[in-house]
Image (cartoon, rainbow, N blue to C red; front, side, top):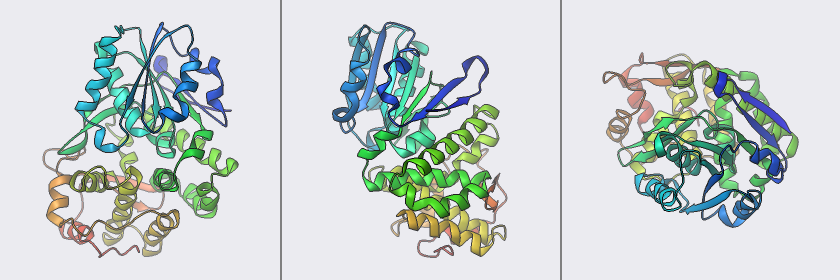
Length: 362
C-alpha cells in the first residue's frame, strides 16, 4: 500500500492507495471518531461494494443512502435526500459520512458533510479513475445549478481517502477513458516528463495493468496534494488544476449533464485550451497536436459539439467561477507542462477556437 499525505497542518490527512485496500476494516474504522456513520453511494456502486463496507462497520450505528447514478442528479434535490436520511435517523454532529462512489457521490456527500449541523466529518472511498486521481482529493464539494456546474458548494476536507484499484475492474471502458483525461491534465499543467510517460504507457493504463496504474494514480495524487497544500481555497496556483474545465463545464451546462461523461467534456476542453494556446503563439503546433493525439488514443472526444455556437460558449463561460469583474480567465499552456491562468487573450482567437470543426489539434 502507498500513502500520500495532504499537508494542511492539523487538518492533514492520508490518501491510501493499494490493491485490495477496502478489505482492511481497521484502516476505515480508525478514521471514524463518533458512533454514527452514514454511507452514501449510488445504485450502480451499491450492489458491488456497499455491503462490504457496512460489514466492516459493526458496532456503529450505520445507515445508508442510495442515490441515482449520473451527473444530472448532482443537484439540490438529490442533496436533500441525504439531509432527510440524516434527520430521520437522528444523526448528530459527531457523525461521519462515507462517500462510496465516483465524483458525483464524493462531491455531493462532501457538501452534505460540510453543511449538516455546520460541518461533520466525512471519508472518501472513490471507485472511478476520475474520482481517485482528482475529485476525492482536496476538499472541493458541491452540487450543480441548472445555469452552471459546481456553483453551489464549499471547501471541506475529508478525514482520509481510501483508493482501492480493485474497484476499477468493474468500470466500463468509457469510464476508464474519461478518468484518464484527468491524469493527462497533470502532465499538461506542470509535468512534461509525466505527459511523455503517459504517451509511452497509455495502453497499460487502459487495460488496468497494476504497475503503471498504481504509479499514475499515486503521481496524480501527489501532484494534487502538493497544489492543495500550497493553495487550499483556490486563490492562486490551484486554479491551474482547472485546465480544460472552463470549456468543458460550458459544454456540460449547454448540452445537459447526461450527454458527456465528466472526463469527456474535460478532454474536449483541454484540446480547446491547446488549440487556443497555439493560436496565441505560445504552444508549438507539434505540442498542441500531441495533446489531441493522446486524448484520441485514450478514446476521448476532442472537438466541441457542432450544436454549440460561439455565443452558446461565451454565455456559459461567463458564469465560470474564475471570472472576476466580468473578465474571463482561462487556463492555457505556455508549453507542455507549463500552464498559466490569464485574461490576456484575443477575443477573435478565442472565437476561432470555439467554432466547432476548426481545431488545429486534430
